[in-house]
Image 1 (tube, helix red, strand yellow):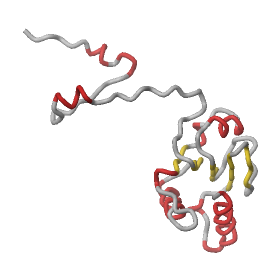
Image 2 (image 1 turned 135 degrees about the vertical axis):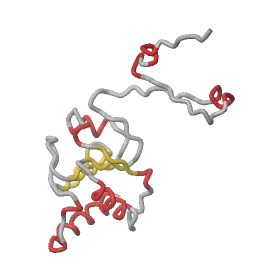
Image 3 (image 1 turned 90 degrees about the vertical axis):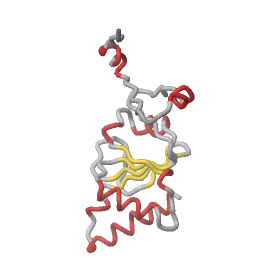
Image 4 (image 1 turned 90 degrees about the horizontal axis):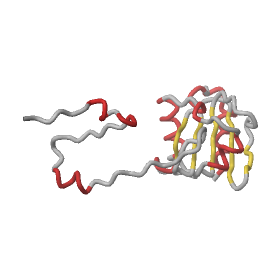
Length: 157
């Protein structure tokens, strides 16, 4: 006689655990389940020291990888993160003060009040830079803007 599984119970709290058939039962008992982190509404959890905020597509991300891997920055991938500006639902000051990163780079069109284009602003011991364009949209004729962005990044270090 087989025991029936209540499928509705599997969806309780919208959590489903998937266990592959290749994983031995001994490992299942030893696997640690991470504790849920309490996050304040409107303030995403970010562990890296640098944060890029904007509508970042794959082309922009590859440009950022090149920029962050060149001296004087040479940031490993784990030292910077990307989020969409839509994830920020609080004021700029509150967002900066309640998140872990110490360097914030806002790219592209931003609706967040308090951002000052092409200027580095200190909020507490953290620094915020807003560049109103995406790096991937800059042309070769806009070398001055590219240099402005690069010099601002060097100043953030």
